[in-house]
Image (cartoon, rainbow over all chains, first blue to last red; front, top):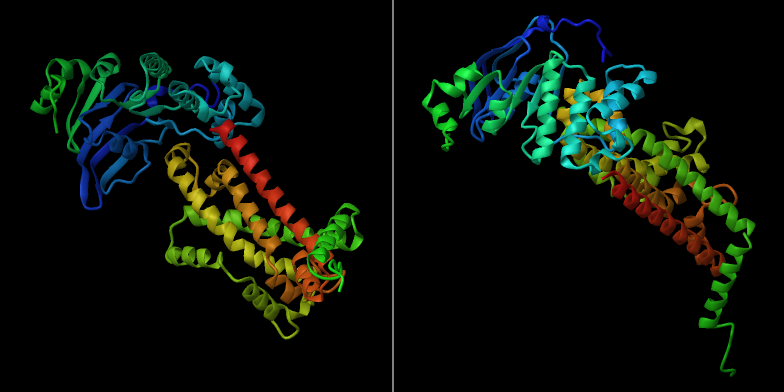
Length: 242
Length: 243
């Protein structure tokens, strides 16, 4: 599907750098001095115990929140981005209209919207549900619709904040397959999860957070076989950390 | 003395009710004229108040600025503005010596519309603010992620809050059609020109012309009941369908 931008060079997608990024809420430091760099079209999984700052990191990186200190910077032109949330936020319209809405916001001429939206619904197995109100779909269907919406935006970078945490195994499989599809299309992925097995299945690279600090950013293979910090090692053994 | 004097007591009320119903069923021209003018004035006022109040309330929900809290409190307080005070204010503005006197609106249906807009606008703006703010809480990350500016969020939020906002607008209509103080002062209750249901009921009751007063009362009550029933039904079915 080449819809918005033809012949994009994903290899050229600007790297995203967080430089000494901190976030303080009501005097409480929630993320402290995080520096990292995301490049290429890798699948980076953000891991860590509850309250480690995973969701916050995603929001800062995506630009939904400004950092209290430090910088979030694209090394080049900011690329096309999309985000899929833990609980999908869908508009009070039918599934199809949720997709055409996203296309309209992005300035796609109305003649093409419907066709593109139909294609995306089919692709994510929602073709039968086109005219169903989005908010009465099941949790898994809603998340697939959110993924279809992100798919239509043709992001160079996709953020997913614990997209499977409330889903059953079949729905989780569908989400993971979608993440693979995005990756194959050349989209850089940053996804948070609390599910170790999921991280093993998906990750090229792991970012490990604990208590609002970045403890590790490492290739997945290295991280899972030889974690560099005792916290990560304990987390991988399934112990309670943080 | 005859035991059953039909000129006094309950029997007269009975016949007043019968006459009232007859007037309604026969579409009595006086009654019909008054009802039509009432609808014209109140619907115009609600339309204008909605056109101003919906975007105003939404903007107030989305933007943070100094004095916002005061404005919200003031708006909420104005929801309870006594109609006679609204009427007096508009009277002073529109009277010959007033700042808007040159338009010669006083004692015209136009003046009544202005007065009712004053009563309905705070209701629509304040309740819209509440509803849109709630929805914005839920939507803002997603809409921000899609790249929408605040100004572009307003139509989306208003549309997605449409069920609640319909009730808000109907509450405004209820207020407009039921009030008597404001339209009495700025309209003057002139027969065939500015006489609406509520002012006519006041006048006819004081004159002792109970059939017309009662007939108008029944029409007014029915209208308000119908509007509310329609709102309820619409809201329920839509909620079931849209989730």
